Image 1 (cartoon, rainbow, N blue to C red):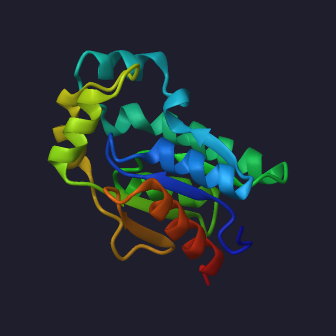
Image 2: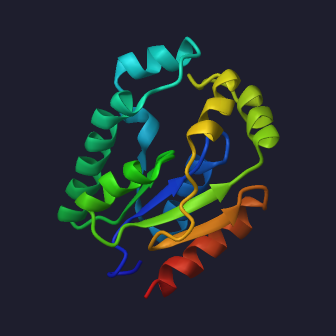
Image 3: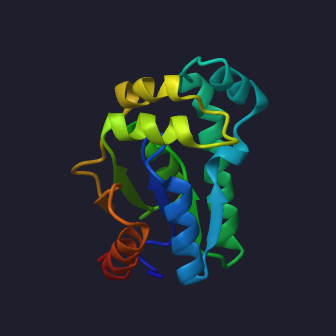
Length: 171
């Protein structure tokens, strides 16, 4: 989409719509979806299923694996879009070290809406009891480079259009 921004991370707390937005943008643009949750080690999944929030140490190897997935995709000529919470600035910086000019789309969502969405989704290992810990961990990416912030309560089509338009115009 944009040579100056070779990949995107769709980020935010659980329930904000990362996977839905990333998949829709990929379908529209012909890019590669990387679903970050699929790369969590079993120990992380077990902790989350038990209602135990992940620590920075738990996330470190996972983030490194995601960075590799991004760089491998780019090296093979693909344009990846990663769905990943990327809750803290140093998590995002860890990904940026592997992919300079990486773009981030921050899906902003009120905590009550996130909790409701997570409680109503089926087949995911993240329980709604962990939503509060996600908000406690979240460091919004305001002021960071190559970031688009979007209201995650907007209709999916509107979010996707905003992402596509922004991505095409990143300087």
